Image 1 (cartoon, rainbow, N blue to C red):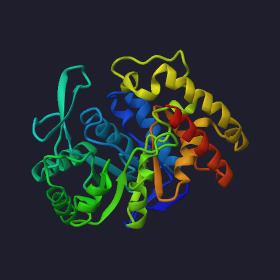
Image 2: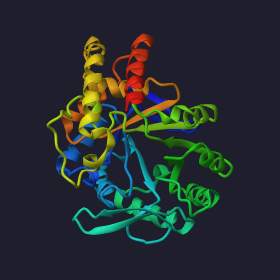
Image 3: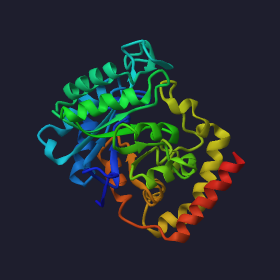
Image 4: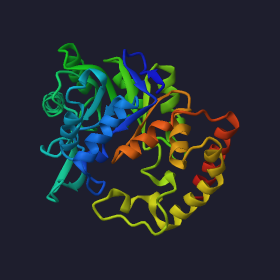
Length: 330
């Protein structure tokens, strides 16, 4: 697996990182813990030795599953997690109403206050069973807290040796500009795939110019770009995709039609459509790694192969042009 330096940090991430959102079983219609553990371990064997999780994924459950998966292999993996979404404390910026893994209703708040970040870090360290988090990230900006206060908390944790590198997620350029006044940012984690390219306007250029790595999430648009989400596929209400705009029947049909047009490119590389979608993302200048989830060992094996080929400049342009046409039509 190809590795890449994350921004100006000392961390070298694989081109494909294990995204552990689905591992928490939250908003994805459930998850099998034993299968998830085997998937993480198989990923490590294949060179996917970076794992990105978050406290909110299953309200701590994903971190606990990751802990079991890396037990005895801590020195082989990069552990990244996130803070700033609280389900256990009604303070900060209201984010959304949701449900606990057992179905109990709850409210989620964006909270990046100094005391909250430090508390969350301690809890994540305990759940993960580790002494130091390799990359600790603010999950979303919190409009009720000055960014300088949040960054000061992360700087304190770094100086205490509880985290190695500081990252953010879903930060826009104005947020990033404020953050770098206080700390050296290793990374930003934005949503990015061939159909959702908003970061190309300013976020991606800013990160390239300032040596900030990019951990791109949703490279397969929550599975839609694999071509496996056919018109007859349904999702339970507990699965957030049941409410996603791109998953509406009329949009899904457009995506499936587009995928048929780029299928020859995938076949030319002996790849699946999902692997092609991931490869397109990691081929973009400035992108360090793509975060890709997996429910089982087979899926993680497929994900690993996404970094085994290179798109030609013409192929990259073909995919971009078809995607742009679909976005304009949408």
